[in-house]
Amino acid sequence: MTQEHPFAPYVRILGKGPRLSRPLAFEEARDGFRMVLAGEVEPVQLGAFLCLLRVKTETPEEAAGLAAAIRETVAPPAGAPPVDLDWSSYAGKSRQLPYYVLAALALAGHGVRVFMHGSEHHTNGRVWTSEALAALGVPVSTSAADAARRLETSGFAYMTLEHLSPPLHAIMELRHLLGLRSPIHTVARLINPFRAACAVNSVSHPNYAPVHQEAARLLGEHRMAVFKGEGGEVERRPEKACEVLSLVDGLPLAEDWPALINGARPHEEALDLGRLKALWSGEDHDETAAAVICGTIAIALRAMGRAASVDEAEGMAQVLWRDRVRTSIPGVA
Image (tube, rainbow, N blue to C red; front, side, top):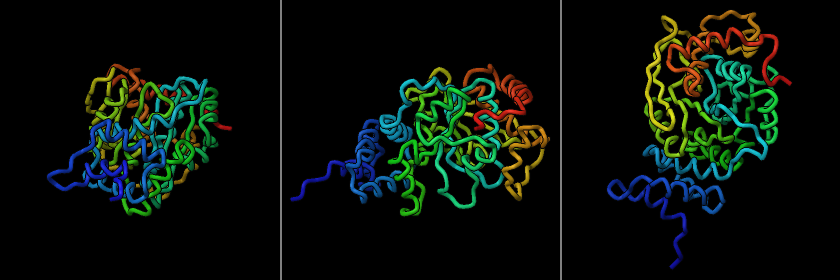
């Protein structure tokens, strides 16, 4: 009889049927995904594993275990500066401009080191972070060493998963073969590659927010925040109230944030990336866009512990955006 493959038990745990299957424990998810990243799994096993996780929806223990395995393969280079804020960007924008990019750069301009990472071009009809940065003249890093240098000099760096973790990028690209998004799309947001003191994340569906919050706690994070952002990006929707789930000194917290504008916000018919530079310089005085940017900055400030309340965070964010150096964008080559 042919000997059972060492990865088979992990597939069996998930797929043994409605009565006998169960979620993976943290250690099982971590150990199984270590094998995946080491190339010790057959393609058919990986496909089954990803689909079984996707069908049932990953638990916090599974998400944390997978993220823990990834973290073992992704680390900041020696001599990298300490990073204040890890910012995930995995959704792209289709209805509004990527104003979150301006929020992150505004924070960088005021001394907050921001490392942003994401995956792009997996969904048609969207605008991606690298395109927004290109419109602003901000280079994208293709190595961790370059990202560390940019964090040191400008306080901001962005890398795509393709360069940050090629094996993980290849797994995420399997969605084109499997026909569905894998749990890696969720888990990649948790890896915090530069081990920032705080992480901000967004979900497309509110039910995923508690999974991220608890997974971050299991990973030992002390500060983080997750909320339903515009289009799945870390971007405040100013026309809606918002629940932000966070960790403060490793303890879970939920806070309700009020809407910032009255009435519905229409979709933007054309996503003109040139407007981002005009908004930064002040040539474009779009008050709704400013509310998006300030609202996003406020959540980041509160997550980092730089504001003691929602009201204080929103007031600080308005001052920070008002006092940006309009003639200089952090990181511009």
